[in-house]
Length: 462
Image (tube, rainbow, N blue to C red; front, side, top):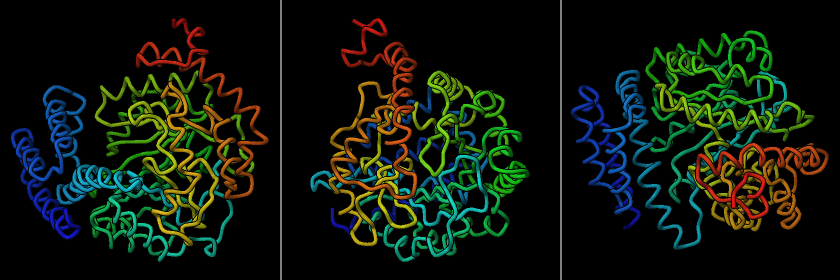
């Protein structure tokens, strides 16, 4: 398929999808099968057809999926939602599959999403955050951000995750977003700068999905983020819900907020406030002067995974656990396998938590940095453990990160970044032993997975 032909197909697919989405929204239970049939016409291969058939089966038999679909067509403005879901289902979904298949023939990785931190400046100073004290002079130039997105779209990446720092202190961010209407921009924000003006800008492009950070309830959020922050997050939720814009939440799981974020009513409250999905990340001691004692215990991590898998089938919201959901994506996705991170200096990191690099995007193309020896070594060794509940080379198999950094000459990207492989190494090694003890039985009993021979005996597997 020629580039021109593909772009026309994408454009036509987007237009038809949006129109039909609005039509379906008026009576989605009867009309949604027609939407799926249209998508089938534009599917690039037989594999895509199978995916659609699977979706049809879930829609008919899975109450959890039915609840989410109901919210898509009733909770959000169809003019905004149609644009977002056209991008997600067609460009981020089906056309990404096509690009990925084609790029594999040329040994070019196709990230599902590219993480960009255009600035590390922030108006908050949260306890244990890896964002430090930065100025505007430390920001990634807008033309570099623009080039990253342009080169990403050329290889089939239409999903961009924007972090920081606080992304909304970066001038011109929404101008850049507006110039890429076929991509989706998931923007992680502390929500304190979200106002009606930002909401109007979101509506201009209709391709922004804000993800609001909080730590649990008022007590937990204000403790880590500062007094009054919780109320600002709630106010931002209210503004987004009123505007009919889909959004998500982000939680950092620590040893201290475990009880607060393992209550089903908390997630029901988030759904009631308008959140459609959410992310939970483990606290990682990868910043300057971080405290490993804030990490959730191995037992808490295991219990949180069980909790999320349980409520996901019963509540009208889709919570995701970045670690415990790793089995569904084949383990670690870093190093360009499915994602990478480009920081405010342009340094290309394998993961938002692995602050090491060998390349700078200011000096090389996106395709070149994706095929660095650093990234290729990471991809060659993935998955790092037979137990995909232990996906991480930073805290689950920490010796692997140390070996790869040493072998490839990767350098830390900020002061203190190498503490995780030096000063904290004994602590992290003990943690790695603990998570094996906590998660190996779950992997065997619930996921029916295999284990290395030396670990089978410890969980009674022959």
